[in-house]
Image (tube, rainbow, N blue to C red; front, top):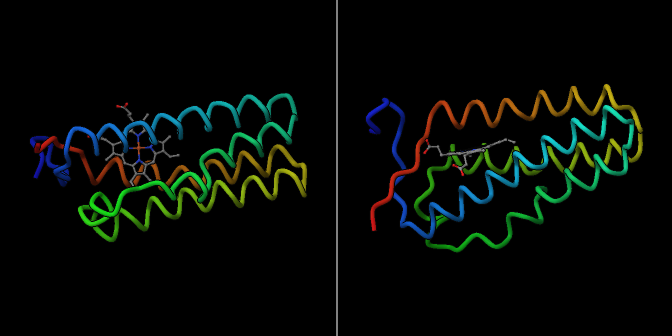
Length: 123
Ligand code: HEC
């Protein structure tokens, strides 16, 4: 249990830095997708979403995977795969409103995970 009541995941400094780096990539993608839909540049929205799709997840070391609870992995998996779906639909449907609706829906994964977990260093 973390001091703020959330579930504390105990990671090494390097593991925590890796997860937080992935998080900042998520934030970059969200900003880029909103900006791209505002200018109706659906190719740019798709490109930004793909950078944080399933392909971005492959480099996670097995030791780190082993420390993450199943519910955490499911939320992470859902976020990555929904960015891929958003990218596909942005290209194929080209509808900025639809893309923003998908972004709002997939960000429920961000909200749910942040409400539940915190990362604590245990080197
Ligand atoms: C599977 C769980 C999970 C998902 C999904 C998730 N996050 Fe996070 N995120 C975390 C955790 C845990 C932290 C660290 C929180 C803490 O220790 O207080 C974090 C931290 C962050 C940070 C801070 C990074 C830093 O350098 O300190 C940002 C920004 C962030 N998340 C953005 C996002 C965005 C945007 C999404 C959705 C697109 C997202 N996250 C989805 C678990 C998740």
